[in-house]
Length: 115
Image (cartoon, rainbow, N blue to C red; front, side, top):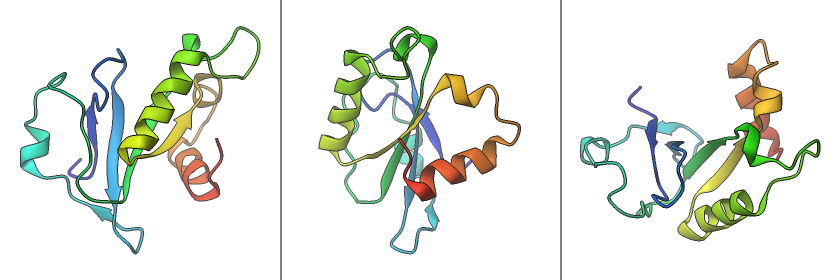
């Protein structure tokens, strides 16, 4: 729990994201108490250091109907996260629900760089 933060890095988007940071050796870095106490929707959360990842868990409205393609709002969100310095990891809702071992699924997404 000390390594993740569920918050709104872009307060103009209605869904919270999962943030974590890895050091140069790909090891998790504890999130500071100051950052943990930061109120939601208090402005854009721009990382001061490198290594930040943002897990974006997709809802059913994140993708076009019957097509596994992101809608424009989500494309804009991912672009803004990258500009701020986050590496995004997108978890589509249609994959997440069916995965028996969510931890293995997250590792696969992260280490293979699948979008």
